Amino acid sequence: MPSDRSPIRHPKGGNFSNRAATSWESELQRENKLSAKLQAHGPVGQAFAKLVNSGCDPHWLEVRLQRMYHLPLGKSNRSITQAQMKRLQRAARDLRTAADDISTIFTGLMYVSLTPYWPKPVAKVPLRLRQIASGLDEGLKSANWKSIRGIVASDRIPHFVRKVREQTGRPHFSELTTLIGEVYQDPNFSTDQLKMICYRYQLRNRT
Image (cartoon, rainbow, N blue to C red; front, side, top):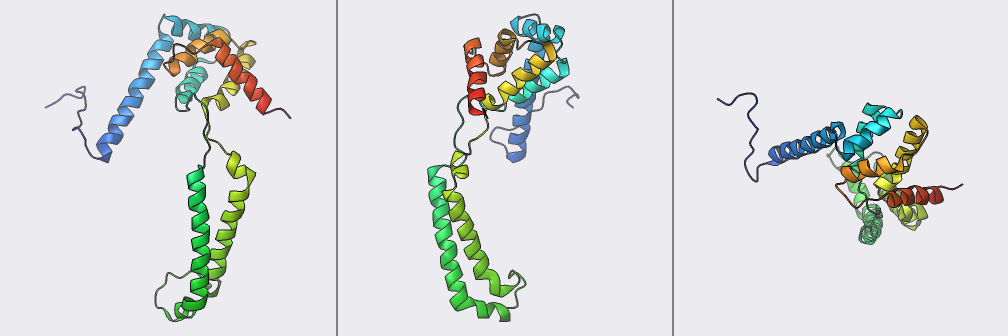
């Protein structure tokens, strides 16, 4: 009988539940490893301690670092690709074709059908389909749809730096460079990169 401290073993190539459990365990190990580094006496722990001693709330600081990992450090990509836009264009055309077919052939049959699944009122089903198609058309023409991009770390890091500055009176670029580099396991992440992320964010959000 295994003890309560025995490691959990999952069969290779297991079902979804096993894969989800493995993923959760891997994430927990990553968090524990980072947490241990923050409390250790190495460069990462020293950077963390300096921020805390300067006025940063330690719990807040660790939580922000742990969450940052889930945002990619690279450039953001468009949320909707060209291929997806073409699929939506086809969907709009298909909706109009379906609306035409239903209005000329099937609308009358809907009234006498025994199925409870037709939307009410039945006579407006073709109109609803055309409205959805028109909404897709307008969205695909919209600059907003084309400009929406996925959120990446460079969208959040400037807020992080600002909060550190508010708590300590300084941005502490050197210490934050060490901590962010550890989060992403990127030893080449530099203070210049961090400053450039903040500078570009300011340029994008100028009013």
